[in-house]
Length: 67
Image (cartoon, rainbow, N blue to C red; front, side):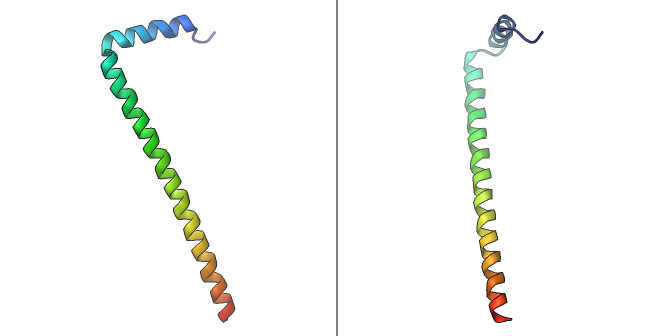
């Protein structure tokens, strides 16, 4: 029912004929770099969020001690 291996190979051959292997290599490299950057941004965002949460908790505990 789905796409068989033979159909995938035919599609791959057509794409290689149209774009060439050099251009596909560049697209693959660019895509890999984009994914790597996206993962780094997500990790930085999580680090920033955890830092902000810990600072908010510290501030709240200091306010509770004062009042």
